[in-house]
View 1 (cartoon, rainbow, N blue to C red):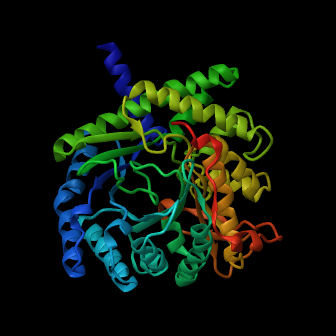
View 2: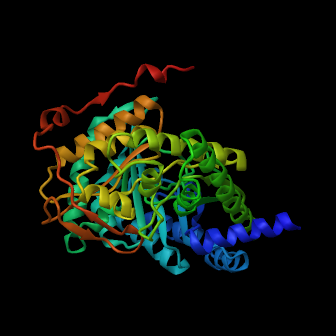
View 3: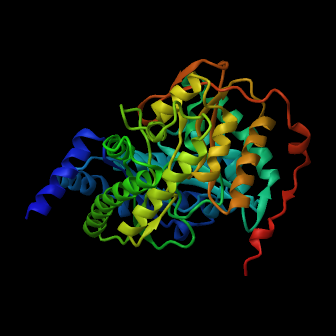
Length: 453
């Protein structure tokens, strides 16, 4: 009995004092059977299927949240990559379908709907090209729809023709929402090695290996980890890793419990627990501050990658002990605009774009929620994407780019995005261009690591 009371009190403390929350409960929905040569029929089928499968999602999540006393911040939906069902649809019809997805999300009271996506890491089909052409407008005229594009993988290499297009698409999306500081770009991720069961936005989609519907959960606990480390200021690094591992175990158990309850109540299979530490702008809810508690004066200084590697590995080990169904991205997110410690690091000139790229080698995603100067060229954005994709391809891991070239802003300006997206200092890019490389196009061949059969 004493053990049970102790555990309950610990969970209460983590929720009330340390910002423990379930960041997202995401329902994945298969839309392949909605494909139809008649666009109007397909459009209606998509709306009907989403609003049928997820009709109780919001109500069940909110009831579970109150019952267990653990905040669930977002209710989300991921769908089959929309490019796979477009067929011979036109660009205008693809934009119309995005509006339908947005309407479904609003009807259900869902925060975000992901899956306005295309997987073009080896080639681009007709439907995929249509989606790419529609992306800037689709993300500009919708509020809750998120998109992603896979441009590379370890098995296929990097499709540099797609990379080149993405630089232009991101610039166009920023210009179309310049009155909102380029907000459309905050809903667009460019991937290498994307996973099929990611519950986090903007990159979630319901992959080809998934069933008809599934519940995936993403838990957030930087504040809990930071608080645990503060209680052991003199621990050596091996002990630090052990503290993080044990804390991640507890966080994961809480998240999986919530996910399984929601799945059972919705009569949908439970999918995976994503272990990713996802920061917010709340005080003491920062991945960067965990690294600084380990011993860095400011995130970005020498030792940052070692500290991040230690933390990421410990989170994975603890989470893997807590759940047999770990999936998604599962590591540490370093979104600049959503992490007060990251913002401080950039303002203090300790953290740079190059250092963030290097940190990608040992963490979950990559260059995430980074505001760039408004005059950055499409080719430079493409080159940034190519660098991140190369890191993912060679290291057999997921990497991603979510950058926002903010129209009219220069290096050092602070841009407000609001809500979970936070605020970000604008970062400058290398003044030398990569135009010729990007214009070459073609495909960077798959590395030797791909030959594993």
